[in-house]
Length: 421
Image: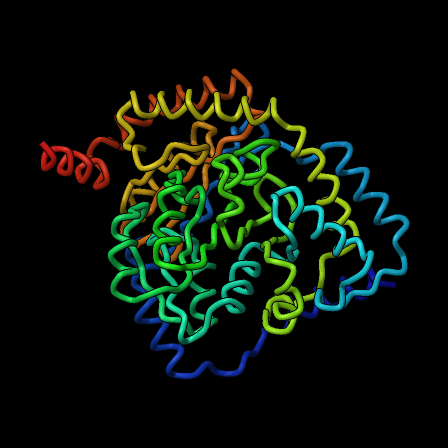
């Protein structure tokens, strides 16, 4: 019956053209002004994020499963068990979750693991950042953001209607000067920056924030699981957890799931449940997602071998790319940014890599600044020797074709080095 309905609807759709109501003239003008020139002139009518589909032998460096936990039998088993047995689950807003609800148990487990008193599981890392900042800032609370802080953090400040003050990337001295001008508020940084793989000078940031009486938010999306004892993150690695007010993370990176998380003192629990719109107006995660994340926490905690392997892969490929002339000096961690500059140049780089079986992810505006587009390569623990060798060989073959030593970022680095002499 259902198959007949689908076939009949599909047949009707093919014979009868869709008729849509007219768009407003304002929207058409905005598209013509902001999108059409980029679409037609810069990227030639191709969606820049979509290259060729990866084949079976492709080396995939376009995901975020850093510890290669996808498919782990403990995680899959927990998900399957939840799907089979949890038939009384009620889909509702996460604010109704309490007591011994599995989602509430997961919140407490994640918070304790990170070294914090309490926490909130959200639909995504984006929702976690927006919801947290919306609750802890307002129009009278300055929010100070690293210029490379994730977009969700900027949107959180916007949702709070807070004055947002940028400070230079990874520059505690500049943060100190900006704070002196505008007064105490909330300082926001990433532990590992998602576009470059740069590590935050977190100890210095904490000291500056404390000196000015600020609260500190650290987004550990790209360090939770990969850094610190048991993968507890950069704050734990540096012994700073007790000095950081709020820790946030996407659970779609090392946890390879769908969800986000942020910590908070227990005294703020009901205030946040009453003020954080993403928590109020989003449904909680589904039983198999909660069960999978709970099982993943145990897996990640025991993944020391994979963390060591990931660091070895990172050192090796960063050295190889640098030796070949790729300007990747802006980062140090498992994210390698090949910043070609313009979108057309980035598409050329992407196509050369994909033709040879290496797949990264294109990042461009609004994920990056204009004319600072890149192919981002994210490493993972399961890379084999053959795959590492292939990536190195392809990088060597592609280098003379794209001339990374002539990219704008390489020229800027040479100019800065010359100026410092």
